[in-house]
Length: 396
Image 1 (spheres, rainbow, N blue to C red):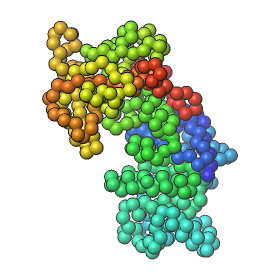
Image 2 (image 1 turned 60 degrees about the vertical axis):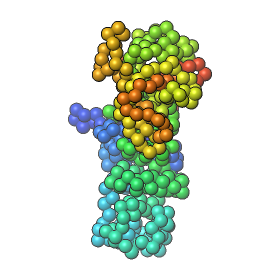
Image 3 (image 1 turned 180 degrees about the vertical axis):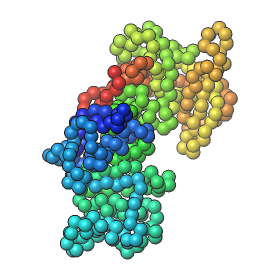
């Protein structure tokens, strides 16, 4: 096990800045996930730690050593890639032991390490099988075992579950959590799949455009996003965003008014406009408004499309057709919302309903920078934006 630290690591390719001033400090034995959309720089960051890519600037430490200019073989790391890449002509034993045999380890030590690794990933009794006799999940376990036998200080995993089917990905997520608990080793995991990031990680590092947006425990990123990007990226379905003008004690958004405590959101009255964020599960039908910690005033909307998901129903909402008197324009010009409700809810398409928002879970973002202003607009119910090392760099 080892601590991993990146100090102001940048990587550019001619006029493209793939990673920009990345600062990460991983504790010994921590499971951290780098997550973000395709092309955001998460894999490049991982490759700089592995030594596959040399950073343009900055330093990398693994344990007590600076490894910025060391080759991968001298860094004490092991990698598991998206493409499993087993040797098709070798059985499981030979695939797992390949790296040890290259390094001329004694035969008895190789046997012991392979048997121990096979037990960890539950491949006992399969060591004489060929790769084409294994399932996708079993082949991925072989790749993981091949890394385990090296006894690395740090595991680096670049979307190792991406090529597996949906059910197998869920099973392998559980396997990786169990593996981390058993080995107690440092893991840096790269994915664009937020479900993997939320379920497996001690902390999530959210990256966009090569820059770190927030690094914090999964629920902190979910409940207290540092900026609009994190709020929209973490959570499925995504957070609703609605532009609003700021009044004296209320927010005017798309024809309805949401009151807030002036003492709860310091300086909000000085702003002209903000962007409201509200998650689908924090919108309630009026008959369920008692479930909201701080319900807003009621808002009349029309149901549009229903998506039954089994454990919930996603309900797309549109505003009631606006007349000329309110000046809000036609329904096509106005913001819609997504709400989730219990699957037993009696609701149909094109139905006029009343909803409320939970103001204790209403997020406000700066319209220019996207930085979070507040999480909750009621005194005593705020979740807070947080601060310190685990908080993110939102664009100023």
